[in-house]
Image 1 (cartoon, rainbow, N blue to C red):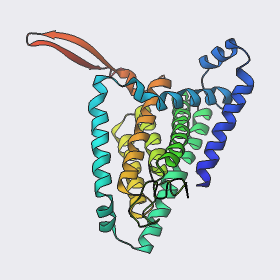
Image 2: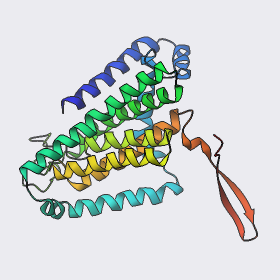
Image 3: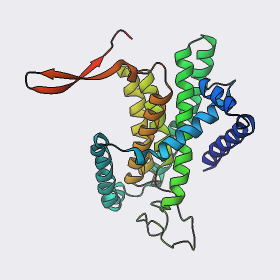
Image 4: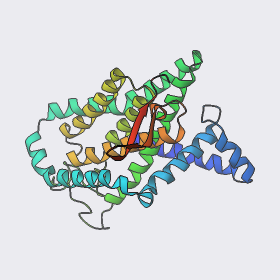
Length: 284
């Protein structure tokens, strides 16, 4: 909880700094947009976070027909998870020692390890003049800040109790406004953070070993939150999906070297009709 508000406070402070530095003239704002985010361009980082957060929050207003299957799958998955949450937690059972271990693991692997890895990566990238590594660390940090801002807001809006609060069924708005906020179980903060981190790293370094490492980390952290009885399965599912989406959104919007640029789609006419050709540039 303290880390969540620390990151939120940092983000708001950066945004206020940007407001003081860049809103006096349109020219200054345009110049900042053209800069890259970096340790010497904090206002630009704040601007990127603010722009991306707005884009993420307003994404539902830009849905197109090709997006509907994914949105439907997310809705169905969330509904099924919600319907089976209580039974799933019953299967997990209560084991204080196991819960303690799972909580410690999820904290270290989901909250502390990603920022530490990014800080180390940025130092190494700076020392080696490795722009790609530096960019990856910055994009992952931006995605994680975007994630925690969104997650904090959704937590207060959804107002869901954790498995150890109330009657243990994860009630949403159990007492109306009388005792708000009652809980911030959905979405899971650990899940949204680690999945946004994982998607950025896997996109920037698309090798199978990297993908296996970061996605295994994200999956294990999400599972550990359930085992620790800190969240229901639906909480980590929603957090994971949102984190994955945010990581991809930041990469597509900000990256100059991600694997997304290696793919291209083009219409192609065949004897059986018109189709879509997917191409990948292996020489990149």
